[in-house]
Length: 333
Ligand SMILES: [Zn+2]
Ligand SMILES: [Zn+2]
Image (cartoon, rainbow, N blue to C red):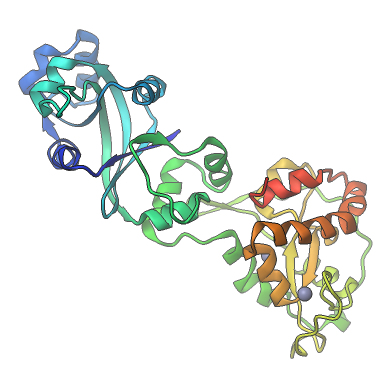
């Protein structure tokens, strides 16, 4: 699980600087910790200095603190953005130690729901990047101590070997959206002289193995499959055949793009390959941008029309899904 906590108010910022950004000298209060905890810290080589954080008692803080497990990952948000990434190593409730380290707040509470961190590394990315990455609303602001919503997290994790790879992708700015994979090189490689593309009967194919690229899992797509799909569609936009664009130099036909109706990132939900003609739509660039970027209402209209067009063909390939599944693939209710 991936958690985040925020250090935005005055107290929290001071705590962040003193016990997260740099480690705290825990040796000074070591004898005030439970024996089990002392052992746990010692085993991890954290009995002298350790990065640590604490939450004040409060219903949701206590609940999340109880759910925290060793090995869980945590991101720290300060006013300017996400600044630290670490793993939970162990936790304790200890009022005396918390008061010694951080004092008390205005209500005389202290940050006694303590957790200890290891493998801390600096990161740097904005809340905007974070929210677009996980699919939160654009005005999302991290607050308090929380975890990434389970479904949003699971959808993202499909592409990574582990949480470290996901955070590094966010951090190092080589994060590519699913569309980047689909467009760019892929779209260019689909462009070809369509008169030379051979028609082949569409048969169920077993899915390919996922490839790992810098910790990011990718599903390879075969441009030849998309070329056959576009040829079948006579190079016309399958939402509305009157959407003409320009004559492509490579294909000598009306330029269209290939879009996977069931996005490739959901390949694991199916046994057979979804990189297949019936799952590929020929779309004019405008309709293609719409299906990725339009408002939910318009996206749903497109999806409903394509669902009706394709569901039987896909079912023949043993690729079965409902319209509500399809909306879900696009993050729509
Ligand atoms: Zn697309
Ligand atoms: Zn169109």
